[in-house]
Length: 240
Image (cartoon, rainbow, N blue to C red; front, side):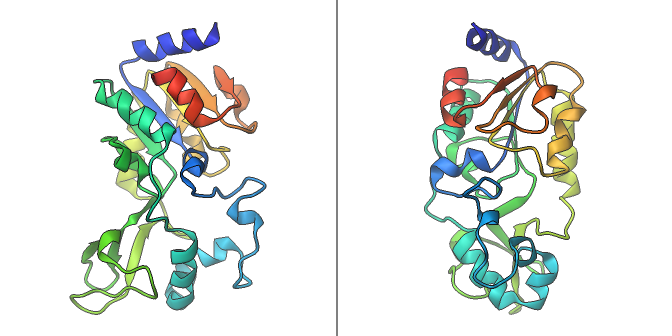
């Protein structure tokens, strides 16, 4: 039975890497982007595509509108970790090496208890002043209007990788190194359409790869195992 084979291979792996996308957090009430019901399929009330609303240049030119959109669409303060997050965190808590490379910006892997998390696209949980560099957490802010620095009055920017911005080099380098030394890779809840994150599996030097996603992806054929099912259910079966 394939399930038992994969479970055994994961148990034998000294370094498990999980690469996750938006589908990991949908069960926590956070919508994804590219599915038929995702954010990119709904026209913005501001008349601009989401890629424009979430761009660096739009943030600089229209901070009021940017934050009006950002607070209402991108931040989910009450979201809680779901079965997928908890399965990974619980497996790590048992003493296994688990590295999580996430494209999500919600911080739910850390809330679940995972310690080794690479946030490829940043996080809505952190902010910094564009003038003096002071740092703030989401808990310190009121999610209304444009937040300003208490030290110098400068505008705060979310530590989220906006369109037109590169990924953090240290984070990306760390993610690549995790891939290079991985013995088993699970990719889950992602359509593998967003680069450079979608290219990370190419850095694996050995080991097996499992893809878990509700819909087929362009890269299905490059995986040893492909399961089209709910990510939370699958991870509980594999790591429980």
